[in-house]
Length: 87
Image (tube, rainbow, N blue to C red):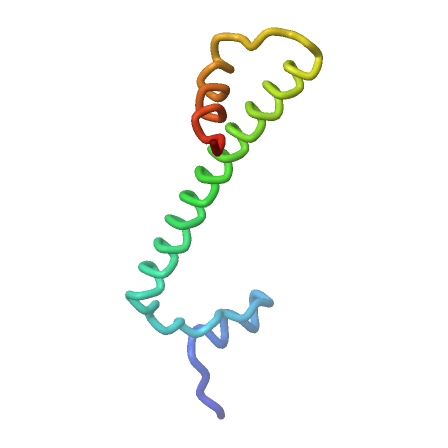
């Protein structure tokens, strides 16, 4: 008679296979994941910041094209664009 372990018997009876214990995770896996998450969050914040200013700039330009005056929150961008113009 062939000897079988309790887990083999249970897997045969219950119809599923119990996987062997996995190797312990490397300590650097968590560190690498943390670095990826950190840079993904920073990149997202950077792109939101750039989109905010680009959208505001385009919005202010469209108001000027329509002949409307700049609003108070547009004036900061208008002053910056005036200051950055070459002589």
